[in-house]
Image 1 (cartoon, helix red, strand yellow):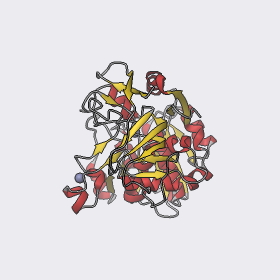
Image 2 (tube, rainbow, N blue to C red):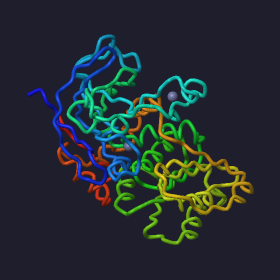
Image 3 (spheres, rainbow, N blue to C red):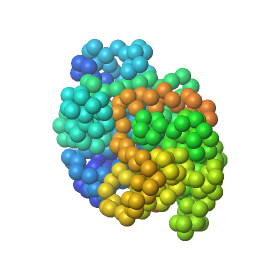
Image 4 (cartoon, helix red, strand yellow):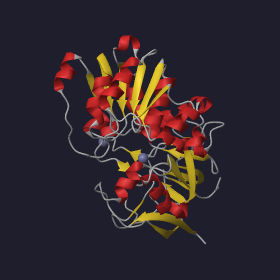
Length: 371
Ligand SMILES: [Zn+2]
Ligand SMILES: [Zn+2]
């Protein structure tokens, strides 16, 4: 029985199907891993709904942890240089940039590479080795993958608790937003990206982190695990001006936050977030990952306040590595495990439905180790 279950999207809008594929062996430079945990993310929901142009059929899953089954010829170390062996628990960056385009080679910004390969998104499973996504019992990691061993004391659930929000926020907050020690930081949104942003802002030295999000159960989890110092529920405080006033009242002299991070995916949040930013402050847009259309802003506010408006798209393999290496300090401070709701791999449709309904914060598909 050398076959592996994988969850396949064959038609946009339709239920996902559990399909069996032959197990694989690695070619030179490649690695085969038995997936133990794979995250379900908002992007998967958008892919399933056909909101992004991808080749079908595809094994979904761009966030995963697995155990090394076999190393291909020439692979002996992970991205940090630590020796890799069969049986090691590893995580890998979901994307492989081309390395030669303008963005990769000249600008050194591989997150903007337009031809990068992304596991679970743009790699069709129609051709061998088939196993090209994390929602599977096994995955074929192509040559060029950035693979990292889990740090001592860090388990797969902790890696997947934030999923791709982790490296996304390493890129957005640490590379681009760059909070300074003592900054007051506002995070709009309390999904995985918002949670991760609030965590990394705190770890980076923010003196106060204000989360403006909801619904109440999400903010409750945030409070329980110590994410954010102030929590403002947009479902309770439905008046936009009142929300801005409450946030300003939490900042020194009521002047506004030094850095405001948008992690909502709701276009209307942008104008509100700019109102929460102080003169000379930074407004960082991370959450608009899918196109939900234009919104009204008053550009006079950008000039008058001398705002620095920043965007951040996806993340590079290096950001994934940094995220995994930051996990020991993150996990010491926040109970990451608390974010996870586990489902057997075969119940992927249910996991997606629960996420869509807002019943879970981070659904995770479990196979193999079943822990
Ligand atoms: Zn994701
Ligand atoms: Zn490139």
